[in-house]
Amino acid sequence: MPEKIFDLIVIGGGPAGHAAAEDAARYGARVCIVEKAQWGGTCTHRGCVPTKALLICSKHFAELKKLNRLGITAGEIGYDFNAIRRHRDQMVRIAALGVEKSLKDAGVEMKVGKGTIVSPGEVAWTEPEGQSVALTARHIVIAWGSEPALPLFSITPHLSSSLQPSAPPIQAAAVSTPPSAPAPQHAPARILTSDTFLQLTTLPKSMVIIGGGVIGVEFATFLAELGVPVQIVEFLPAILPYEEEEAATLLLKELNRIGVKVLTATKVEDVREDPEGVCIIAAKDGQTMELTAEYALLCTGRRPRLDVESLINMGIRYDRRGVAVDEKQETNIAGIFAVGDVTGGIMLAHRAMQQGRALANRLFGDGSIVFRADIVPSVTYSHPPIARVGLTELQAGEKGWSVEIVRTDYGANIMARTELAGQGFAKFIFHKNNLVGATIIGAGAPDLIASLSLALTTGADLKTFKSWIIPHPTLSEVLKL
Image (cartoon, rainbow, N blue to C red; front, side, top):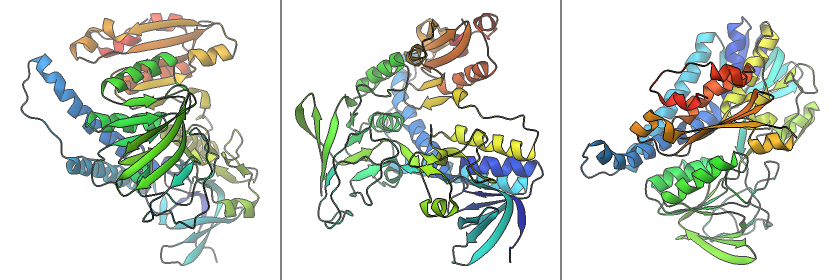
């Protein structure tokens, strides 16, 4: 017999599931959420929170070198990697506890274990001890999240590696393998993903990062600022290929300045591991090269985490890009919805949360909260960071739009100069006088983009921007047109 009847059952306690469950409960719905292991999901435990905690540490260490310019003399400086790890882990614990508290405060019934969809309206909750309990609800939400997407290339492991000699061969493929590509079952101990990197107890002596997207650039920034030799290998002609070209070019110069070596238009063909490290065989312009390091870090994106057996059993449409949903986040099975990374697309925590909030509002609220994919801001937490919302100039051009470009420079901002913020700019793209995209690279960009995100959401035009009064002196004046 069912244990209890709910209005909503959410499977997955990451950002999307958390937002859907909490908001639905606050609207008065009877909500149950089932999380397999860690409240907060990838963002809290293996993504946003731990990586940003690491980057804060390396940023402050790197900025100590600027103090002399400000008349401040510091003694001998250094860092303690174990203390950095403790700070990171504390931030993870605080974030996870925050997720738990907000769900409890909202009145959500929380269950730890595996949630499996048995039929429309019914979920089997399997407790860690193995006992299974039937739960029923009017609506079910899938929020399984995502996992690292590993590229397919040849791996030659050392005999002691976790990759067994009897494993089937892995065929070579481009570094830019899309999230739909299947991942190898095992990876050698010195071949890391963004998840396993966080398990290291000592700082690598050297690193080759395969993939020059957001994840690769962020890890390269952290390691290089702490003095670790880093090489990035990117299959495409440029790092951060989906960002504003000018911003990616400026960041490349900054990465080079802190010692990161970047190889673009380069294909990884083989990764060989031995007890001392790794050797990466790559090809560029018809020439073969060898790159060596203590570790290789695969930063080739993420893919939806799919419970294929459940999807097939239920007849829910999906492909390797994720669970298929309509504009209401509903699958092809009535009453079963999916939100967040499991639906594919750009995998960002705030995107996932907004999908969850919009769904909860549609089901139990007044329907006034919506999710729009075209206004989701994105941030690369490099130093300097890049933040964007809407289209790049290239993307607007691909639509055939005539655009007006307005650009402001950090060099003309007195607070940026006073704070030794370094190089940066804000670039605004207008089409028919309406804002359609904006990019900021420079100190404070992740916070500054929020106001431009609101401007894009509300349809602000060039006249509105020219009437905007911004306090002086502030860094935010880089947004004044």
